[in-house]
Amino acid sequence: MTRSQLRRVAIAFALVLGAANVYFYNYAAFLALNHPDSDIRFNLYGDPQIEGDAKLKREPTTGKYDLLVNDYYLQHIYASTIAAFRPQYVVTMGDMFSSQRTNKEEYYKRIDRFKWISHQVDANMAPISGSHAYLYLAGNHDIGYGGETRAYQVNRYTNNFGPLNHDWMVDFHNASQSSNGLHQFAIINAMHLDKTRDEQFRNATWQFLQQLATQRSQHPEIPLALFLHIPLNKPAGICTTHPKTNYTDGFVKYQDYLSPATSAYILHCLAPTLVFNGHDHDGCLSAHKIRRTASHPVALGDSGNTLQISDDLCRMNFTEIDTYQAEVEAFGEATLSAVAGSDLTSTADNLVAEVTVRSAMGAYGGVTGIFDISRDDSSAGSHMRALGRG
Image 1 (spheres, rainbow, N blue to C red):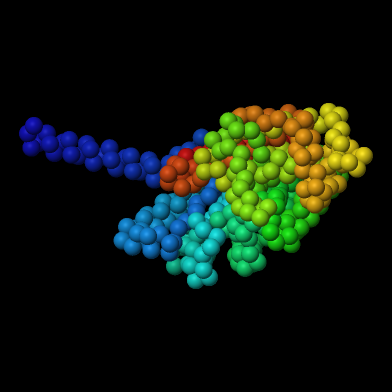
Image 2 (cartoon, one colour):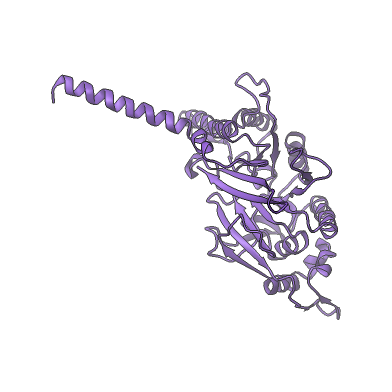
């Protein structure tokens, strides 16, 4: 090959490489060009799990560069998708950090890094203006599982990321948090739904859950979308994760899915339309079918009483659910079934779609979930759509 030919090959290669870099750097913007408009939009980011001092101790030289590259990668994911899709809400699905056991100094270093990564501040730590709100879910790497959570972990989380549990209404005329609206959203602290060593945390979570159940019984016509870090219980084979829970002294040490009893309560008593979670880095799309018309009385131990559909279950507190765990699980098995995949535009009654958002980490493709709600003028209703954008 002559020098002239080599030059032309080199120029062509440089042009192709340059075009590829421009395309991939602006990938989110290109995707957004063909993305339908919506009235309300959520950008969902799964389990970034940014690392820090422990990695530097393990890998003094390479760890520094690995953290730097990872921070820039995640920052590009957040910044480019926020700019391209212009959401009203930016939701990180939990596990902002890689460990719940960091000391105070390291914790606040990661807070500053995460603010930059999630496009809240610029490189000089000056706030970036925007019309979207930032929301967070507490994950096991943020406050620990129920068997290990300590008060200082909860306090520093709530001081920096907001309440563990809260709900709000959104309408089409004002897509921001308000007391009245057409759609209801709730963030639930999944870490303390099942057996928790410090009962005050579980009690606070279940009080919120029961208040939400009361609201739902009064206004079942309002669509509800739930956000919680740990997925609902389902049989093996539907997602890549298998149902597994480990206990220490009777309290949750590790958990892939919420318990069957807790999942039954959420599905029957909150009657959500959609459930979003993280935790499982691979992501998953599934649905839960609820047989609300079934009559399936279950005997509650030797009390002579029976558990009927919905009303009796929804009046139980977590102590009663623990006491009658086997009976509640039997009730759930008789009235619930989970399937892989679902049409998230479906409005079928008694079908709850569950979206486990794939991790935003580079090993999982830097995926961002897009959740849209659009007004349907033809039916005076609304249309929900959830998509993954890699």
